[in-house]
Image 1 (cartoon, rainbow, N blue to C red):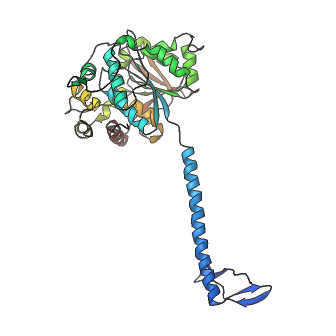
Image 2 (image 1 turned 90 degrees about the vertical axis):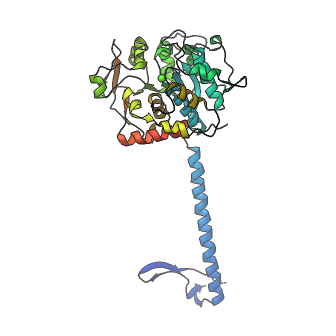
Image 3 (image 1 turned 90 degrees about the horizontal axis):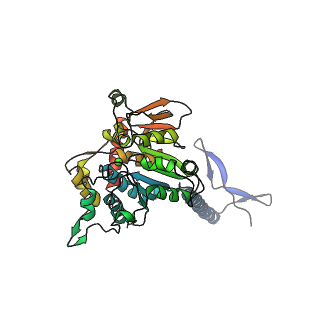
Length: 387
Ligand SMILES: [Ca+2]
């Protein structure tokens, strides 16, 4: 038997592989028969197929390796004054949509609104999205405990004597105090992992900062936050030149000025702030509320939006932007200011001082980014539950 080999030749000025006219076997030149050329061609085909399969396996290996390297879902705490405006409810829907996409994991919702209907609304939303057991904490005392326009109406809505949106909570006493929930959840998480989104008053986080060691954790609140939290994403204040010139005092700061001062002065991790100017520039399209929720007869967010804003009206998306940045910081939805420090004066105005060593930044959105964010938020808010 003599070995059959491909030979490399120059054909038409290009280098290529072709079948040889003869080969050497045991040092002797041997001509290649037609049958042997057929074997060679079959070998060439098999070689090509084998190579393709090999490359395919390598690529498959790379894909599965890539999946192993996928980032973990962001462990998230949502701290909200839900009920004062409807963007908190929209932000909660957005969180659930992102959790259904395995991009975040809602660890707890803590309320800065001392009203049982706020807690009931959160629980009915969590239940609607198939996650009824997410811990809920609620401030005691605090700013703006009134019912507002939608939380009670949606929580008590019935069809033929049965709750339209099932949930279990009924009384204020059933809802644990928020600081305790924050301490318990933080203590249970890996170090430097948790992202907190604060879209209401700073009451709960300021109280966390001054909380003392207890049977939940030997750390005080500040040390616990420093150890467990990776990022705090806040909707508060105002940073545009126009609003600064007007001495604008934003609602979340005005609701508890001492707490906001405490938060920006003492919080130990990085903070990214979505100022008033971002959410007001990115209006949620009323048309989305009218058209995109037809997959279900009753949707708690659509109903809340109707009671609060009216289905014919656009809605600023302040709180949604803080969630979107927290979960998708790498998507280029926003630009960030240079680092610096935010501080809150006694009238509730926010000021930003640039400092390369600073831990605070605020969001900036270009006109192109505003279009993108508006579309992404509308799609995520109206994403059907994954139940
Ligand atoms: Ca809010």
